[in-house]
Length: 181
Image 1 (cartoon, rainbow, N blue to C red):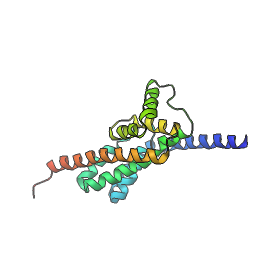
Image 2 (image 1 turned 180 degrees about the vertical axis):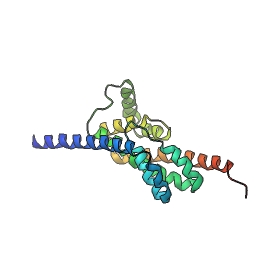
Image 3 (image 1 turned 90 degrees about the vertical axis):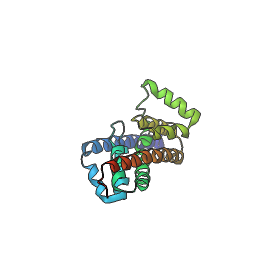
Image 4 (image 1 turned 120 degrees about the vertical axis):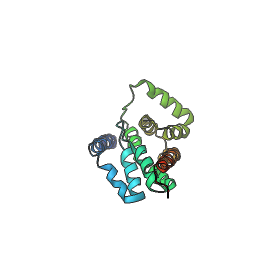
């Protein structure tokens, strides 16, 4: 009985932490881009922060595109994709905590069914496609108790490929506006 209460308290604390983190990141969203002056570590941290919000999207991919103009796009994608993956743990932890945030939403069952059938591939595809629905996939993965390393691996692969597109796209578009040597 005592262990059960402790587990319930732990899940509620985890859920409240994710909500608090989302509110703080949304409140300080205008200060996040200032971290870009710190190079690749700044890109990594910004990606963690812009992907740690649950439901409230912050434009991390636009920042990745802009940094692709300034820095080597390949390393921008590695830093941004790795940070984004770590940031997505907030949704996973919200689902793992046992709080059913999306239980009443129609498409939640569809995501859950797909994840039960295809597991990590669903995480990969949703991480690759720029969309705000990835939070639902992270929460569902946590609720289904998908092993965290499996979640991180598939998420990382999808995020890296997505960030490669945005970083190189930003580099190419930025090149159009550079003065010729």
